[in-house]
Length: 263
Ligand code: HH2
Image 1 (cartoon, rainbow, N blue to C red):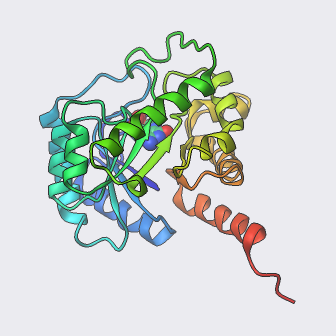
Image 2: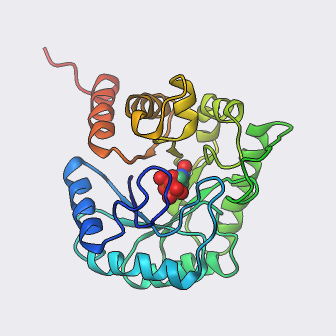
Image 3: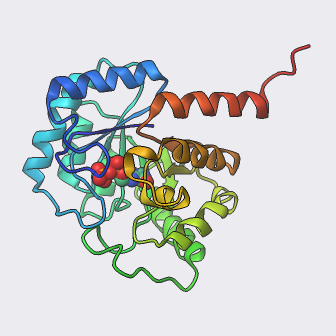
């Protein structure tokens, strides 16, 4: 899943794709680089981010979805927490909603169900403004697993087909380094919940810390290593900014793991 942030303030690519022509070019470039899904976001959810108005979010996302949804050879996902943005995006042809808030906005589940869309339900403790202040868990894996299962069950009861649901533990969303590590090491257990798992660790500070404290732009190798670790642990979707590098690494990993043994 290739990331396309049409925001001025995303933590690693804010301001780069705000202009429509640049966003469209980047989307097509990611198709070329081997993305399987493109995920368009109009609101940064980095720690400390200030929420934007629904109108502003729609103004950022709608032109991109309008221009791409019918044309792209791969599904278009929209990264949003807001029901009205979901409705507009799905009407304009997006086929997936990626929600860091797991469809907790009023009416969100119904909009996804009515449109027969796919959805990624992510775990987040607190909200972006304050979530990294002092997150504490009794048992982070139990809590994330219980939350995701509860949300998935509610979605299914409300008419979203099980095979349309993807779950994501939400790396960096109300989690300290130790929580991220514990969740990474528990991916096989999370995969046993019976839904595909999506992992988003690309360029995140957790990766920077494991690399000895490097800045965002120096986290490529660490991000790719984490993507491979996640894939080896059963993750089925990897959300990444650096699509080409991630895709090439995953292709080799896949061939080594499951490819034929040519003589
Ligand atoms: N991470 C970010 C945004 N959306 N969605 C899912 N499902 N999983 C994630 O881990 C995830 C996500 C944060 O990354 P990014 O979009 O690059 O930054 P920002 O929120 O600053 O726009």
